[in-house]
Image 1 (cartoon, rainbow, N blue to C red):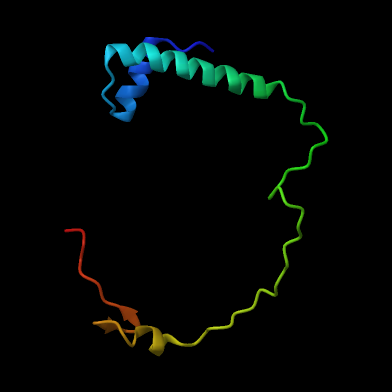
Image 2: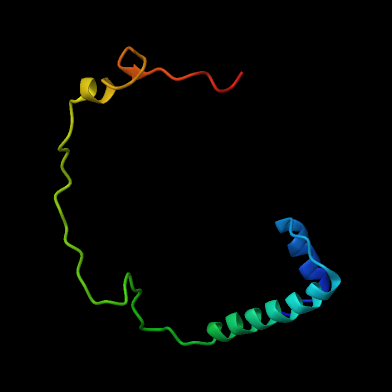
Length: 95
């Protein structure tokens, strides 16, 4: 994929970035190099490679999925400036 100055103009317009004529040519060259590098990555054989969550070999510790802080509605609402029927009262945002 080749990046030209028209593509740079479109990207700059979409990103709302002001780009001069000199910069358009420079950015076209840089973006074209980036796209060529990405295309090289497509050629890498990744068959048989397991996905990584980290470069460090480690096992995440599993914990029991249990509720530990339930039934504290009064404590949660204690510092609220205003409550109604067990809920926070907040100012209306949409008119």
